[in-house]
Image (cartoon, rainbow, N blue to C red; front, top):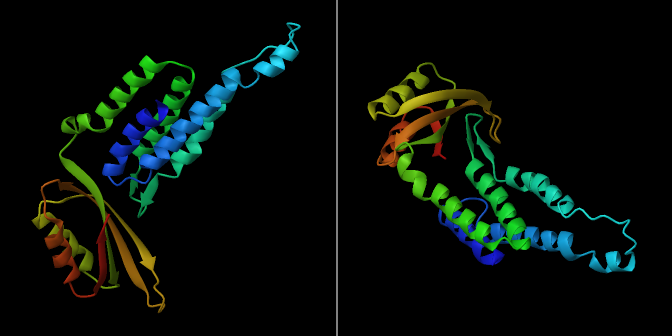
Length: 214
C-alpha cells in the first residue's frame, strides 16, 4: 500500500522532471513505514520478557525523528539559481508528505493515507489552473565589461513584454582569467512565450559570450 501511494506522488513529480522523483518518494515512504512498524511492534519480545508493568513504550518516538530528519532530504531538492530564485520547495514538501504517508500507513490508517494522497495529487497537479499564468525563470548572461550592454538587454526583454523582477550582477572569471560580468535576470514569462527568440537576440549582442535560461 505504501509503495503504491508513495509511488503515485513520486510519479507526478517524475513527469515534471523534478529532482526527487518516483524512486525517491517510494524509498522515503517505505522507509517511514518500516520505522513506524518498528516503533509499534519491534519491541514486543522485549516487553513480553519484562512484563512487570514498569516498561512503558512510546510509539511516537521514532516517527518524530522521521518527520524532523526528513527535512534534510527535502533540503537537498531545493536549489538557488543565481542568487535570485529558489526552486524545489514544492518537491521538498512532497517528499515530506510522502514520509508522513509512510507513517500513517505503517500505523494502519489506510483510509487517511488514501485520502491524503488524493489531496496531495490535487495540490500538486489540479491546483495549477488556479495559479498565475506567468512563470518565473532565471536568465543568465555572461558578457564583457562594457557600458550600455545592460540597457540593451533590458530593452530586448521589455520589447517581448517580459517583466524583469530582479537583476543580480557579479564578476565572472572563466578558465582564461579574463574578467567578465554575469547578469542573472529574474523574469516573469507568459507560459505561451517562445523563449528561443529572446535568447538569440541577446546572444547576438556585441560582447555577450553566454546565455542560458533555468
